[in-house]
Image (cartoon, rainbow, N blue to C red; front, side, top):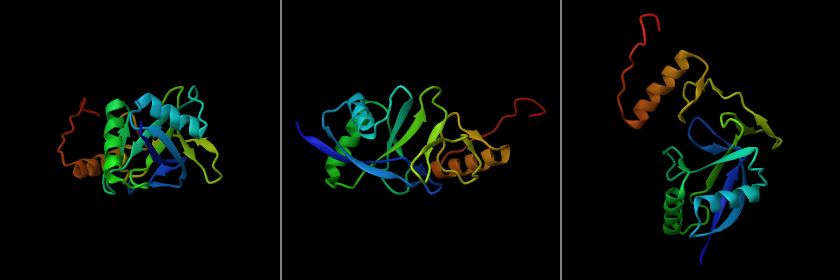
Length: 168
């Protein structure tokens, strides 16, 4: 079976322009026929991650302007492998890893300048945040409104807000 060489960027973060920055890079080799679980285990082993404490979120970018694509099942791994093989370039489609606290899966671990892992508070205060996920917490209503307006424009959809009652 053929193997695939992939660059793995970790201990970084996504900036407001949807670029992965402040990262460390390593290489991994895995079989082209690998499942999601096999890919996950190869990456976790290479990074020395205790899978009981830390959960990995595996993502990659197809184009500069797109949001990252999440690899979370076997089909996503197959799509990634097909893209990687078609590109036939070593440094194209690097995998970006985010480490999450496995106890409640909500506290993201951020890499600091000295490569220590420190827990983030998880509250988004940047009104131009472009990375939107379920269960994100925003600093205030104005920040949430700003982020959602920009997200709707970027993703080309319309939405309507309905009041839950006369007060809120």
